[in-house]
Image (cartoon, rainbow, N blue to C red; front, side, top):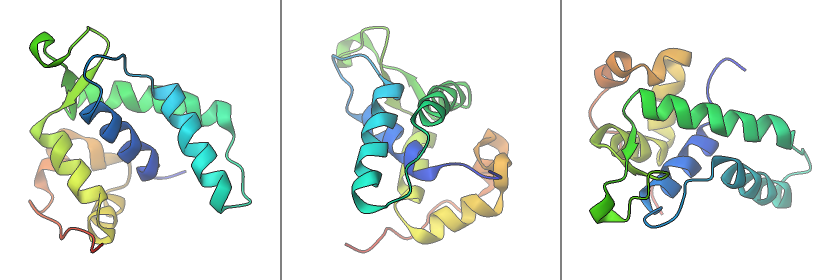
Length: 128
């Protein structure tokens, strides 16, 4: 795999965004995503690999300041997160095909803060 599993990253960011009062559980979120995907596709992802990847992504997103520890006054318990401005921007980009293409074009460097910050500030939102 040369890039990232953007569906998994989007899933993790959405859970970080709404995790007030509960612990962040990347392995559980990966399992939920795998189950959702298995209902639409016959290809079954390796669940153990996906769970490990989710934990690796959690560490990467935290280190690169896409997520930050959730403040106690916002439901923080020491084991959950909030999206930073960078994380919100990434989530917005993942909501559009053009945003995902811009990220894919950067390969593994896409989530390096300096590289990510150099991407165009806005990507059109996906039409619903």
